[in-house]
Image: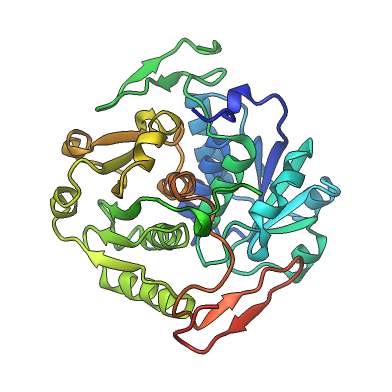
Length: 187
Length: 187
């Protein structure tokens, strides 16, 4: 059993994610996957640029059922979250430096903003990022890159209900087992 | 530097992926992300059910530029690839057993088929899988789950051109650097 599973990790950065260049008409499912992966793998919030109220509500509904404090925050101006994380901005790009090389530095931070672009990322993002980080240098997927980065930073999420959850999965070898919880308690 | 980066790993399973229940009209971008993540994180092929020739061509075009031997294989009958991997089928589901617990067993196999479902997965898949594996027990994303599983199984992909690539990224702290290669050689 790896020793770096999340609940046992004494210190780990608090991670926020900024999704840049979301296209409400074209990206709804991809950005939903990105938001859910951010939440499931331990990020605290997703800043969404441009904002998308419908998507934020869908994710909030998941968070209400499954617990935790994850939220989607509208970010009409993407420079604002970047400015709020001085010296702690990780821009995910396949052109960047290898994650394996930068990981020890990222782990030492108390908070990080992970910036995830869509099709076109302004050059300014590469300049303002503290680190441009590649999770592999092949074309892949921002959902994949974010999940792997979070897993390497924070460890695999453990089982167990999240705080305030109305339901939680009971891990099982076959089939599906879900527990219903009275709201507000932690299993 | 972690010692389990991919190129140095002496033995690792050869991984194929089966995407179940793809909907060509609704899922094209998600399944493209899934295919690219499968390729980038070291899988050898994606069986696609039902087949989608257009998507297979798009992925083949990426693979031609960036090298390697990854392919999308049409799978009109999803039971066939499952039958071809006896005792080596990993079904990714948030209802399954924790990845951390099963990882040592998965790593010992010489080959694995990772099954990734869409919205509705037939109960038969849970029964026929050798392992039902959860990469976290919260709703997330099949792209995220696949990428994290592959990374934990095979390690982070290293930099460097892939065999037969026409181009390769030169990792850099700022901006984008791409090398053009004469086809067929390995950098």
